[in-house]
Length: 98
Length: 392
Image (cartoon, rainbow over all chains, first blue to last red; front, top):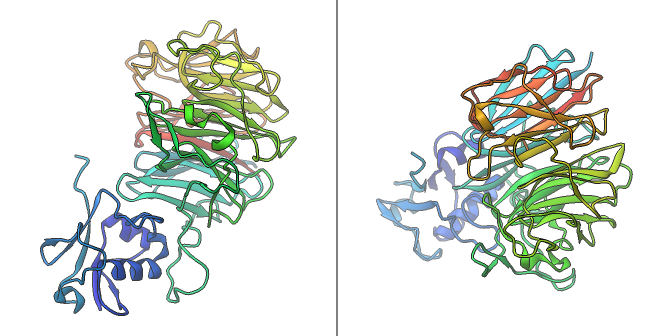
């Protein structure tokens, strides 16, 4: 089970409170987590990754275990602490606008 | 008794303002979609409970929202939570992909940038949603970078109408200061195959075959500083409007000048007359008087606020050229707001109501065709769009 923390606006859009918990088929990677997230919450499609290119939107980043994974290959396995649910996978919106 | 419902899009959410036919007491509900830019909210003329909203964000991109109950509840069409990911693709209501196929015409890949170089088309947001006059599930979307999309399944999926970008002048279109946006979509109520659209900064275009083919309709527009005054495209049209009873007469607020055409855009002529400035964004037509039109002059393109600190709506009862300032109930000192291009609307009650919203967050209404005004609400986020529904 993977724990995913969404930015506040995406939690509102997905109509969820707190963390999202996902069961991933196969290895936990950026791609498999996001694929599973979007399959469960289709309204999030296009808000994290581009529909066509699957590129991360520029003002979002992916963090796990205090590491920035935004530029990792989407198929790189996520840390064990993420795969086991010990630590959450964080989708962070750029802190801006002030 | 009739009611009106005013749909307001702002920089930080949407608001719904409702009143009875007197339009004296208002209920303000919202914000909806808190914190997101709401470029436009509009109801279906065929089913007033069906509303569409364009919700957008620099972080999260485009979202389309739909209501089937007049704005009480909203959904992302085809985007509901699922426990079974199989079946039809879901979550595509915000998927706006330009048509690059050879089969549908001439795939167009670049447009002109500010410096004259060519730049790839890139979807940014939906500026305007125009529901079909007859089918609640059909809706058109004007987007940035400029293109026209259509949905026939209630906004679950979108397809570009590629004949517009591919008709031949697309590589000469360029962004205005607000981006290269398709911001106006008008459907001819007497001929559903005829539509007009407008793009900043390309101009106005018309289709007579339901959107398969398009032609620029900019003859007579004059835009100082562009190299060729007779250019087929390149004019910064801010807004066009028509009266349903006379759909071949269009009124235009351009970056410079107010103009009209009486032959469906084949020829335009200036009707700015005695307006205090030549710049502005909004223009609209009285619901029952096809020659009564409204604009709100803005000081200039470099000073995007009303002139002399006075908020004045100008009305012409002669289809242009002769204009009167409408000031009763509007601030006449120390006012420095702007009124953006989609932020004026008219209702269709016997005494026509006029509505507009400002970048200062006020929404003003007149229940007597502009003679007197009062604010419905004063302190919203900056208003991007105003639409009104007249309900039984």
